[in-house]
Amino acid sequence: NIAFKSLKDIIHVFLTQDCGVKDAQPTVAVLALAGIVMNNTCRFTNLDWIVSGHELENELKIGKVELINDFVAQGYGMLTLSDGEVIKLNDAVPQVGAPIACIGAGTGLGQCFLVADGTGDYRCLPSEGGHGEFGPRGAGSDDIQIELLKYLKIKFSGWNRISIERVVSGTGICNIYEFMAYKNPKEVEPKVHKKHLMNPKDAGIIAQNAWPGSLCEKTLKIFASCYGAACGTMALFVQPFGGLYLTGGVTKRMAEWLLEEGSFMAAYYDKGRLSPLLEKVPLLVVKSDDMGQRGAHLRAVRLLKEEVTHQAERLFAALDLRKEGFLKVDEVETIFKGLDKNEARLASMAMRDLDVNKDGQVDFAEFVKGFSRLPQKLIVNSSILHPPGADRDDALLSKEELVAPPVRGLDMESQAKLAEVMSQYESRSRKKYIDPFETRNLAVFRTLLWKLKANADPSSAADWLERDYWINKRGAICYHSVTENKAYIYCTKKDLANATIEEVEMPASSAKEWVFRLHPKPQNGTVLKATEFATSSKEMRDCWVRELRQLQQEAREEFQ
Image (cartoon, helix red, strand yellow):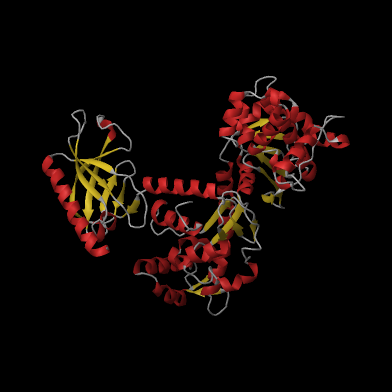
């Protein structure tokens, strides 16, 4: 995301360069986002972007864009699971059509639940239960979790409340460990503690050092108890007799430990007189880690079926100029004249094929059957399918009305790290896909070159990549990637204005002898690394250096 200014730009680049379909115009799109979705609008949690599904529909010409929370996508993913992809924690049998719930400890504590409609299809609903209050537990005089709560209130600036995900999550494990180290300084293992201080949000350090009797093991027991209690509470709220699924990175990595150690299950069932109710809730740990992708795909397929019918209804109404409930083939064909010649021909053929009775008329039932055969350009550019944004002003929310993201990442230290990552990204990512058959990309000078991999050993022949390089008509350096079977721009003519171009004397051990170095320096301040290229002969190296320096002189005259 750091290389783009908006989600719309990312999607646009994907559709035009990377999806592999020419002039791609999706019928529907389902986007799973890390944030709270309200009225099909979301304010990103970790990037302060505003994303509107309605705006994406209009600007990208997509029939229907549906935004869902990323954990809702996980919930839909539960519907795709097979028996071999889960670990059963009890013997309860799922009831057909009963509610399903999903809870997952990872970066935070995600929650959602699913309910079935009259047809038996499940709809997933979001929940932010992970932000509910942490409720300490403990038998008799055991007040360790109460002390933990007090510690966290101090750590997080004396807030009135501490959310459950401050304890039940990956960072929650780290919070518990810090409390235990504070309370039991004599039990701290110096080497483990040093690793934690170097990576204070890495729960894996605690998990890897949880040997019997250690402070790390005691930390995980508290975590497991709190996690089990949170799962039991959600089971009481939703009564998911269709299954309560546990997902998330922390859950998956600790599944075996949670099952065998005992603290988790004991806390899960510890709900007083309602404990027998939980014995009827199937409890399952999800082993697969692609639930978000699978869930978003499932929702997209369902939305596609719904939207095709809706689009057909709207387009039929738009083409039914006389509002007679049927289309006259000859009148509709006049509308198709706005398409290019081939699309107009296909549209006319489709309309005639739909006219089963050959009476010059097509009713809606016939139209729906042939809707997918209509030219895509007619569908995506229809104002009926993409009404102006003004028609939906009452549904749009302002930035202030949406849930604000947390302030993490906005401090000076985090911003400095982001700038460093951005610089490394731009240095690494020069690639811009091009169509090598466009006139502007045709070669005026072209040869084979060998590019030395970054930080590689020049004495190793395997570290020199053979590629077809050329200078196009605009003075850009282009190349063909054999592995990706695509053409890319290495650098533009403008990037050469301040570039360093030099011949390189290689040591006798080098696998290539005739080498030159090119170090593009874009005028926007982006820092790119120098690259060594090898040629087949001294004469060819001289030729490349001469051509590059000529381009450099032209670039300085044009752009400086």
